[in-house]
Length: 256
Image 1 (tube, rainbow, N blue to C red):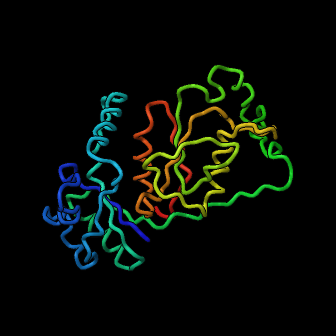
Image 2: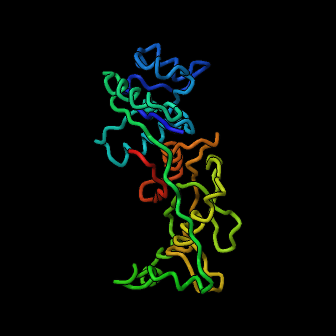
Image 3: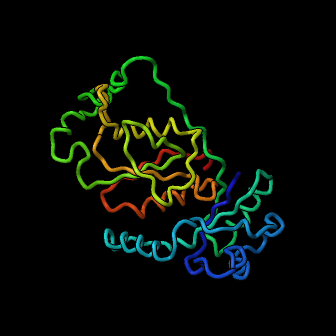
């Protein structure tokens, strides 16, 4: 599946309401003029951030303004995407959108890249953790553990954004939120490896995470409908975070 992502001017933001769809709204505003011959199904035009409502968007804006009053904040409902299959007309559609004075930018996003798998050999897991050692080999985690909050036992939260995890691992304890999305078990080994590096608790093997006491949660790039939407996952994760917290992005796309 491919997506054409675009942003209109803020005055053309569309917050879901009634039976009117984003595609119908933009067509009435003449924003989609010229793409009808390439995109015949206007139901494929959707808000880029469907997992948040107007109230949640307003809260995110207020957080941003309190941290940086001078930062120009765009309307989150002025971002859209068009679901499309592989087709030569995709690039033509993007070009038409870019030439529309009501649209600030547009690009074609292809499928996400392949996630690497992780397999250990039959030897103690701690032997793979050279990154915990003092510099120059590692990051000096032992020094941080001696300081207050150095094991992650402070108020800092983090959210891992990727495709899949295991929730019954004996050395890991992290949360799945109500809007974590669809968990793709085909990629669970990668998610567990990432969470282990960060927050694994010592179960007697001597291995542990960089911050073994941190409070973590996860957000899948596969949203509640099972479809890939990384921007929506990022914005959904932000609703659980405050200034100083950590958003970990373990995801990438082929293009752009």
